[in-house]
Amino acid sequence: MPDGHYLYNLYSETETRLTFNNSPQINPDISGTIVVWEDYRNGNADIFMVDVSAENPEVVNVTEDDVFQDREPSIDGNIIAYSSNRASLGDIYLYRITDEITEQITVGYDYERNPEVSGNFVAYESYAGGDADIWLYSIYLGISEQATTHTTEQYLHAISSNRLVYTDNRNGNLDIYLLEFQFVSDMDDIIAFFDASVEAGKLWGRGDLPWIANKRLKVFRCMLVAAGTLIDEGYFGLGCLILERIYRRSDGYLRPPDFIVGGAREELVVMILQLRTDLGCE
Image (tube, rainbow, N blue to C red):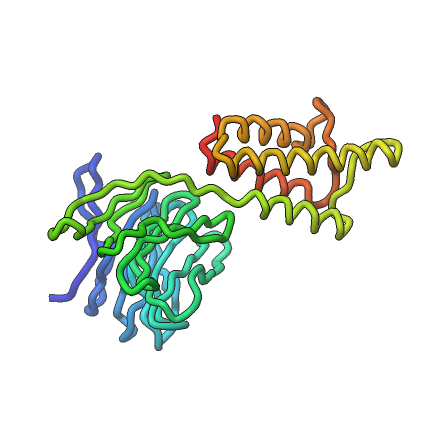
């Protein structure tokens, strides 16, 4: 009997079959009205998806190829994360549904697998250290951090917001662990973006007179440095306060007046807001 995927509606208590192909379809995941799964109808593993809210749901091959093994899909909102051997033994990829863009988020020859995505974060298993560890990737910041460092094996199960759960064999058997994390970006990245934008003429000080504009530009940079220092030293509350003031001096509103203007202002503001989110600022 061929494998198939089924959808069960908890409200109407109805069951719907989603796949009818004679090859295996396994590892389903769902977010909203979109279901994704691992499909072998082309002789290798591909990632397929379907929007069950559509009047005539169309099954779409997200990773259409006939050579590589694309497996273990996880979906949240607009992002599908999956593992693939197209570049090495195993790497993690992201697929953005709305713009149909694929992005590789791990590189090198180490084995990475079993991704789980939640909001801005992707968690996955990595064997770079010789055993199974869990790593985290910030989609917005584009950087990874190691989440578990114990010398035993850690196997990822799920991630939700800033929490992930996994099994660990450090006690001689498999136990369940919960990790709450703070994925804090390096303020140096924001300052580097600011400096590069100023040098490229994409940011400058706001003011009718040159000396006022230059002074405001310098003060704004000093505020960035001060926030970074506070965050690095663990004073997250004060760091959040300075970041709020930085945001209010760059948000594009008339009151209080911005210290900076230019084409890179909006991107800088997004980076600042994301850092506040990562820090858990209220």
